[in-house]
Image (cartoon, rainbow, N blue to C red; front, side, top):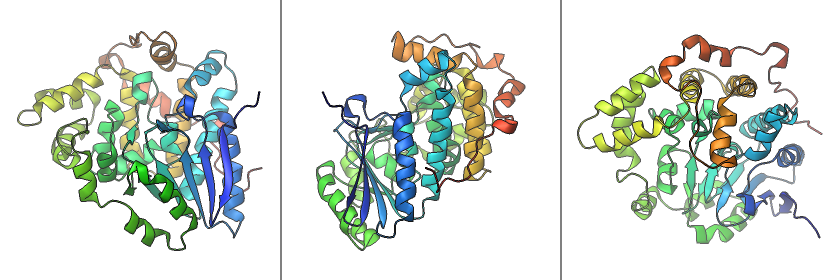
Length: 367
């Protein structure tokens, strides 16, 4: 019996085409996929015949739903070096995509979360299909919004990134475009023609602008399927009022004190936040504030510092137990409350690692 490759590479027209090929696993990113993708990108970066890279996914449910969490859980429990190897190599890949010297076009449709965000959002072009569901839900599993979330989330309009980081809220096609997570939008049914276009055209930006939907048409299309009845622009005011606070506790207070048209929505956000890991919430807010003032590479080093400490903690393993292993959806967070977590507790996650810091050299010459 033959086993399908987890990731496929081919030359199509002017492009190097990558296909994430684990549709039954929602194209979750594995260590092997990272280890194959990075050197291929490096080869194409150096190949003058390759003018751009295009990344797509097999199946119709997900672009990529995240990292291979079950394996990471097992490796972490066993103190297997592959746990940190995955994050080290994934973060190096994210950084290379951010630096990539050629157009990098991600065709995102269906679920795009966690690791899937890392191999798409840092590219030059992100085209969202009708079925797009974007989220960074990591605080719900005792983790934190990584894969460059420290950098890109604080740079979304206002405090949208902080809202997404703390609540794990989902954006569909219109919201992703409005927030700047996507640069373009297209109908899912047009993705085959779109793939042909982005692989073969000699005028990428001009053809994309002509082919893809205008923002007004996307908003109209998606208005009935957004999680909130309001558009993202209509929520901007309440998001900024509440999520600009300096502490998680103050954000919750503002949400629960909100009055007027968005009071119900704000209350729901507070309820969602209270189900997340208190430690992860505080880490995520610190990320948003530090990341707003840091360059991309500094943000990736911050994330590796945090995940190196997460490995030796309780929250990630308890979150995965509750959601993936036992599926009781009743994590016993430790500490249980925000009040039990001091600033010095959070500071420890962000402290430099000394000789174990993430090394971001040699990204374009990887073997």
